[in-house]
Image: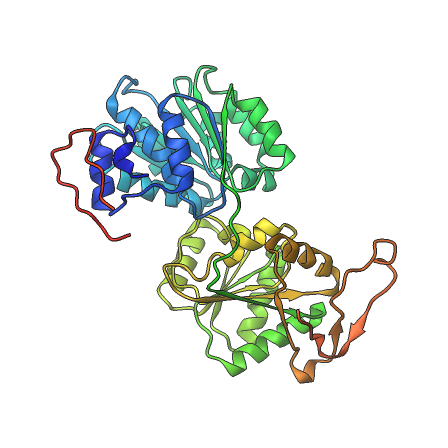
Amino acid sequence: MYFDELNLNDNILDALDDMHFEECTPIQEKCIPEILEGHDVLGVAQTGTGKTAAYLLPILSLLDDGGYPEDAVNCVIMAPTRELAQQIDQAMQGFGYYLNNVGSCAIYGGNDGTRYDQELRSLRMGASVIIATPGRLISHLTMGNLDMSRVSFFVLDEADRMLDMGFSEDILSIAKHLPKKRQTIMFSATMPDKIEELAKTLLHNHVEMKIAVSKPAEKIQQSAFVCYEPQKLKIIKDMFSHEQLKRVIIFSGKINKAKDINRELKRMGINSGEMHSDLTQPERDEMMFLFKSGQIDVLVATDILSRGIDIDDISMVINYDVPRDAEDYVHRIGRTARAEKDGRAVTFISDKDIRYFIQIEQFLEKTIDKNPLPQDIGEGPEYKAIPKKESRHRHFHHRGGKGKGGKRPKNKKGSTKPRKPTNN
């Protein structure tokens, strides 16, 4: 479906034209009409499917059409991380380019007092749309800097990620400041029980839109090493000694581990940096700039980078730890092979993580190739399922860790701006 076929106003359609956006993604096609109709919506779709536009476009269109107070905050968008809040704000600037009376303000923690003062000035001057991380928003609410009593739209983006990060109580606390009569929109990449419970609490007679989690792009070359934990850094050293690897992200599940990995990479002479929530916002901004500009070759990151961050030229993703959820695996390796480029994804499977990777292979409905270990690092564990009653008492070994593993519709809104067809 084309955006022209939806009931978006002309200013939004003109901005989409300028950005060369013509066709909706499935989640946009399903959610935009429901939001325009005023329904609460729960959208379930993985990252990279266009969820941000799925809620921003109809909300901005409705706000631009008028009927909302000009001296109030009309929309609050919650995001789990500063990076995603910044990205939503950037998308807001693009989609709202032709809107005169719909301004936004992004507020997020980890900054010095200067940033806080800037946020305070923006809030006092008036912003129709607030994009915020939970902790910083609560700070402004506690200080009396923000009145949300007339909010018409409340959006939770990456809701499952916010719950994983422990923001459940913060979200419920924020919701108490909202009027009962509002439109609430939740987007999530997964649908665990806790998301269903949150939806029951916040949403009213909502419609649910699910887009099945797609398998990783076929152009991602997936492989794995079956190894013990101490062998992982030795494998990385061997990989980098045979290739000049650049534009690499190494994912680790824990902050301290990411710090340790980066420290060891630097000792190996690898040009690396780290990205995690222990960094201040200026430090994180600087690290992203260094990586995007090619000044560092390898970024060791927690799952803060696995969703919602657009970096199009990643050549390789290394899963230093096996994700506990198959969908998280898809999100992580989805950072590579973007923008029509090829990519590689390598996973290190320790003896304790074998069962989790077997579940991932079952989800993918394919067997991932297992690479032989470098000859000088010893043997790895055997890749086979361990019965539950034996899992705490037995380990299996074998040599080398090997295994086998048409025509565009006319503008229905009558915009005078010519539509330029693009090649999709």
